[in-house]
Image (tube, rainbow, N blue to C red):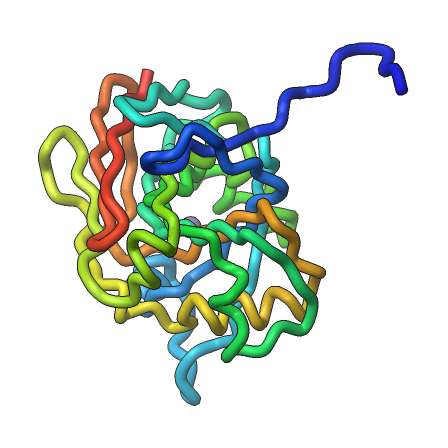
Length: 233
Ligand code: MN
């Protein structure tokens, strides 16, 4: 087969202690998965506890990753770019209508990620009932650190998830506060689409999201997964 121009290279993530890389297919993100963050975003309290998980997406080529300091370009059309530290789940196999009990079998590994958000654009879209895509799915909006295989780290489900900006603490939560756990998220999402090897899932952020500007150094980590550093330029 020939193409009229060279196809875009496959987006991929580095894997700890491996020469091979993880080829990325799609990027799914869970909204409002920590109650303290849902509250700070103004979501109504659910009388019967949690609302069902909901999802949005970023293009695979919005991913920016690396092993050292990751350089991220400040995006256009925003005066209110926000950080959201998240644990990323990377799927090594797929399936539809996966049960909660079988969900973890799909996971290849975990990474630390940033779901960068043009909060002003997202806010206007919410007001108008428009899609969030341009608030969430812009170039370099999905930051990811090194992928840690399950074979090395198991399935982290407790411990700190944190972020600092220029050394100052901004987000400091715990994985146990996720309203929908990783297995629940995979099972639920697999009823909506058929999941495939290479899919990433950003699993939501704890409270403390806020603005970042050019020059800021972001450091973020998840206990049992590792950490990343990103510089906004
Ligand atoms: Mn998020």
